[in-house]
Length: 145
View (cartoon, helix red, strand yellow):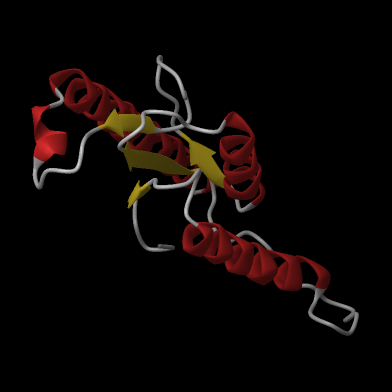
């Protein structure tokens, strides 16, 4: 994830956001916390606590019901921002990510044309953000030389 230009998660949403995904974010947050505070015992010199520096982050949810719990998405947003990831928002609800409403049939998600277009828009925003971050880094390097 640290070497990637951006991070995208696509996951099924049966009940809110999956507990395994939240546990994953919690573990990443623990790494961040330990780096920021020097582990369990205070040290004189702390390492750089940043895991991800403004790296674009997108999330795609697949659900049968179409209902996304906003409180859970706020928690996810707080985790990813605390990790230094930059959330890429959609113009439509739930805004953080794309909710692809489907039924139970295999491949049904691909028939939701509106959601597929929204996914393309979020990916385009991520690519745009990646290009801006790269440009800023190059500009900063040139300035340092």
